[in-house]
Length: 258
Ligand code: FPP
Image (tube, rainbow, N blue to C red; front, side, top):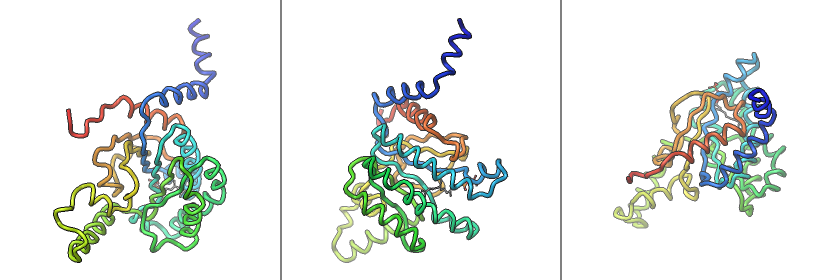
């Protein structure tokens, strides 16, 4: 009997996942999930492949996770694809990562449009290769009227630089009299950040076993729930996303209250 039960359990991982998805949907799903997609290089190394193979596999995972997040009713999915510090990597690797938005959007844009996904970008546009920027801008334009999930690419993004730029802009506006010093508060300051029209993340996921923020959304993550996993990004799948959300749903968020 026990053996039969085990067999039954093992036979249906996907139906089990479907059940978990349905359960997760009955509770509060995080409105904004931000992901630090880490471990592509290690994934490739384990398979004796070049590092870029890991990035390519990681790109496919973005599609898979976007699809599920959209199905779950997540409003915003931010993926950290390239930091302002990632320029330090070998040029061939940087060039490869910069070609991924083109490939991703060439391949998946029709699907994203069909799924009512809106593409957004958060990061410094200067320094981005023209082909990367134009692929993103085209996708942003073509999906601007979509009302479903926002897929927000953090590309050439760095949080400290973002905060410093915001401080400078606020100072300029105070000097020119557009803004009064007394009007500076958390809400008004947030409007000077790159995330200005995006709510703060409810859930942050980082893969690959690293437990740090790596200059990612330092202001915006103030009250976010963190979930870390040892899974390398190219191995991340729907079950992992569901698990992260299940953990999120078991947590109590107090925002500093009791
Ligand atoms: C970190 O892993 C990953 C990156 C810096 C790049 C992430 C990019 C993708 C997953 C593809 C993005 C897809 C689109 C569509 C833009 P790592 O290279 O630091 O891994 P390691 O720590 O194992 O070396």
